[in-house]
Image: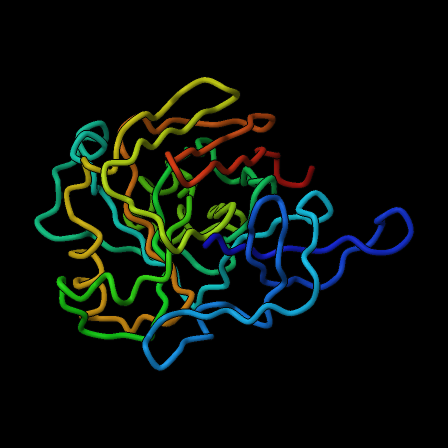
Length: 270
């Protein structure tokens, strides 16, 4: 099941947009849902989204980020080669940082290059969406709290990251967390090829099999200190090959079987 959020075109000539809605993407059609699908849970624990109204052609909607998280937790240095390319060692346990929900944007929306930064980097990643409120999850139970998977780009102001000595500002700018195009609830993330391209040129090309810490280990670690709520996101780290982008560039992050997300880069104030 592929879950999206979207704006539906309305008005004469499709010149206005209705409010954001959740939907289920099936064969170029979107079936509108009554609410966020992870809120519709049967007694058995299975998700049963409520479809309302007739299906809508996907060509008549604008896809948004398929997430409205209360928090976004991210794993730093979860690929050994990426840690090495920045001169760092692999941490002895998952290294966690936050991105604010205000950083989230969707497919084809612009990443804004901040005027106060002189280097902004792409970081393609696999993201996990939580489906159930949980705390102190055991590794062997981690799969039971996952709603699905999507693609993320952990955009980073690299110069500010080095300057500040902590990552809140460098990772937290508005538009610095593109997510999409959908959340896939039946996706198997094991050993999937992950690529990031800038203007069609491959920058990152790796596989999720090279993660240092597994998704189950990450969820267990994070849930020891933070209650996870439905819709929350966990970004699982980026492989080697990170590099700078400039205003005018177009970034694309692709993960086999999960699709791709494209985002242009624009200068602040443009």
